Every structure is written in structure tokens, then in C-alpha cells.
Image (cartoon, rainbow, N blue to C red):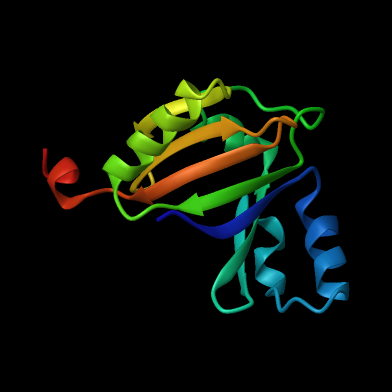
Length: 134
């Protein structure tokens, strides 16, 4: 069963964004300020992820904009096949698929669907050993 694992935030200015969340009490190392992807674990392993728009453009199959996305939800699936079947189930029900499932360079099976309000929901799982052995 997929489980909510993270919330992703697009940062137009990583330094300012991380400073804001530090004020809210998150323990984010200062060295993270100039990264393009930062993750902070909160609440029993739940993660807040911060990405620059440049890193999303580099690794996604669509071109994001802050007009249609500022926050995205992430659901961790148990397997690559679960990512595929969940994507198929959601799109078959008439919901918009933004990114079809693909094997991402960072070692995950990855797909994105949109909820009825246009919020992206990222589905992912670690790549299965069989799919990475080639």
C-alpha cells in the first residue's frame, strides 16, 4: 500500500527558503543553502524536500512552473510495479498523468499524477534489483 512519505517544495531562492524553515525550528545545516535538493526528516521519518526549479527541469519530463506547482506530495510505493499499476489505475479513472512511469537516474521508478486541484502527487519506489541489472 503506498504511503505518504514526503512533501516537496519548489524553492525560488534556496537560501531564503531554508532560512524561513529554520525559523520554524527545522534543523537544516547551513551547508545545505547552496544545494539544489535538500531533504529534512521530520515526524517519524516523514520528509520535507526542497528543490530548485532548475533541478526539477533537469530531471523531469515536463517543464514545471511556479504558477502550477509550489508544493508536491510524494507517495512511496513498495515496488516499481506498484508505481506502474497505481499510475494506470489513477489515469484510467480519468485523472491527469503528468509524467508516465520511468526509471529515474537517481535510482527510483517515478511517475507523477495530478489531483483534481492540479497538485502534483509523485509516485515512486526504489528500482527493483531486476530492473537495474540490465
